Length: 531
Image 1 (cartoon, rainbow, N blue to C red):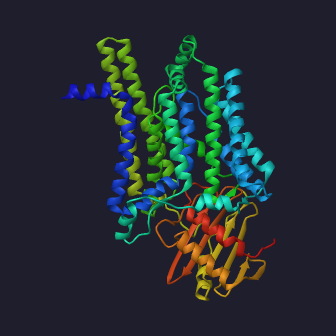
Image 2 (image 1 turned 90 degrees about the horizontal axis):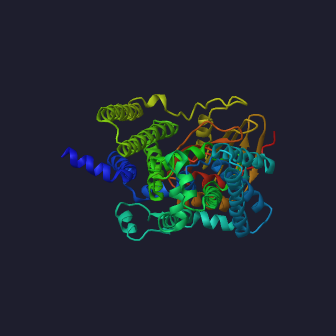
Image 3 (image 1 turned 30 degrees about the vertical axis):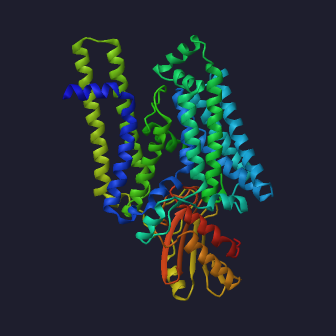
């Protein structure tokens, strides 16, 4: 029996990371659905793809880069630059489709430039793409120091169009839930995934990508001796990844409806972790594009589980993903060592010692993963995120959310109370919107008032509660330390006998899309508070 298992593992070694990731994603979601009734809603499962469409798009491009034995750290910078550039061009009145094509061309150009440095000037991929990331981040602030709101009809349609899933509508109706749906960015992400799978496994270009990576760079030299177009392939890989990064930036713009230079901080690490957990080896030459989908799902499921637990900070997502990434790298290393050990046929005593060492490493990594899970469940107080106490950022002491003042305004008849704190000027602004159209604002030093129509207020409330499903489990509180240019938000809404308060922070991938949509509905009605 043991020999059969060993033989199975040996013959299917390259599929083990992929199968492990897929099993982990499915089991984790199944366990969550067992303990949390809300996760049994089909829409919650589809939200895994809605909230991670831009991550999947970017990870697909990075999979090709890593398969060649390279790395691309510029993805977060290109994503941020795409959001800022598209937002500014749309604000200036450019046609939305022209902006989309221009952003994709910009991403491909940046990718081609970095690829040229790597291929022809022999610059290390780590250095070339790190420089590209900082260049893109710097260009963001050259274009605009502040966040730029996107208010374009085409972008609104692309971001808010709901595509119903056949067969799931009846199931949702039996559970008393709205019909489940996906959005256009999800369709784009899966279309790109299918195209990438075909390119990787059924074209000469894809076979060349696999031939280049792995074996500590020696495979690249072998590919050259075989007459394969190594330089052209690597250049096209980085160009394609630039395209994917720009497309991910456009998808992210449809997620937050704004652009800012500090959006997607650390996004490149999420991308690399997704690719590695999907079974692609960092040394290149081994892995599957399809596995990247499950790597993204593991990250998304982890995030959802932490949100449903409720008492944990969203930073726990990073902790769990970090541990899982280490485990997958360890497993890949062990499998690679077993393969190389069989090829070199060392003496039996050396092989036995190597196996024992690998077993100790595997047990150590498994113990680390188990310890992380125990801490995740048993010590939630260390990661809990309080909405009443906001951490310190470098510029100033960020004010706590004024929940008591918000409650008082709601008792006075306000239907929406919105508190915004932090940002580049460390603001502390509290707004209240009343059903008759009266809107008041207070920053502690100034008070302003504005009058809008009652119909506008009613229209906004309907959009937030119905279209963006404010009072459902799709909208939940998240909190991370605000970046230097980002704001922390507190929104309390009372409508049609329902009341719900939610917190969030700009520029984070953890924020649910409905929260960003609600902000976009509220902001046009607010008066301006001048310092």
